Length: 174
Image (cartoon, rainbow, N blue to C red; front, side, top):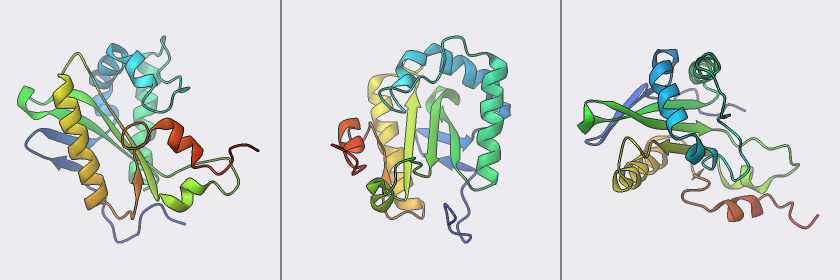
């Protein structure tokens, strides 16, 4: 089954008064790498409490490889990643958004029945203030929930806590 309907054209850019989002690609490698490494410790919790990305010794070449994969996934309509720029700071690179299918090795994972997608975003704390990150995240959540063809999107760690997200697997206590 396709992640998104054939009739939906995923936007290559999205703009608000605060943000400018653009398809994450190899063109952003240096900016992305610098931003990722600047806030690596904070990013590790974005994708789950036990997630180890990015590695402390990740290289620019490894990062470029990730960005090329993200761009390929975008145009193959498998997953969608965006670079996030802060407009008021001359389009400063401040983070990323990832919209992905829910993948699970668990049989009958209830999250797949409850949500059609999961999304994650991170922001560089050195580039922006906490209030900006919260407002930007709220704008992104609203955009994904209202402009994408999903009935329900989970933002684990942001709009649903990790404990609750993990409890939705239906596998607890087995």
